[in-house]
Amino acid sequence: MEKTNSYCPVIENISSRMKKIYGKGELGLFLAEEVLKYNAYELQVIFSRSRGEIERLPENYRDKLRPYAREWLSGRYHRLILLYRKGLFRDNNEPVKCRDTYLKYCDIIPKACFDNKIYDCRSEDDEKNPYYNLFYYLVCAFAMFVEDEPGHPVGTPFPGGFEVVKEHDGYLCPIRDKEEEILYSVCNFCPAKQDKRNI
Image (cartoon, rainbow, N blue to C red):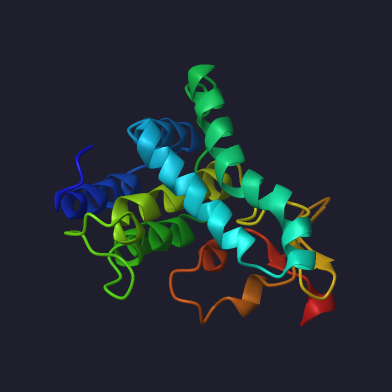
């Protein structure tokens, strides 16, 4: 896709179409088809930006976080494409859980991508291109609303020695309720519950 101001209506259209989806299989198909539109250069920029953000963290935390950060974006992207190519979404008629939360998530996608402080639909600058930010929200939608996984992969460490854990009836996250003030944070839509040991 060319880098033009056509990104704005494209992203709004994707958000609108997502809101009309009710099933996990249909959503998985939709998300896979959208992320497959990213070309090799765009994926390289996206994954490079993600690695750059990790490398800016303090060394002792960065080394622990790095494998989970890879899984968070590139690992989930590859899993989404693999499931799509195997045709595993076609038979999944299970409804997306927590429809109200899902619809709110769809609503924030354009707002997050078009935040004037960060992204500019007219920009040729890779750092300000909203289409790259969209990728992150599509991959997180797959994790949270198709696979019912937390926004941060299980095992993701956080300062203080806490991490995301899986329990028999769901997931616990040490920062789940602490991200509410962060604008456009996917944590606000995460199926994990707040780990009460870190309140």
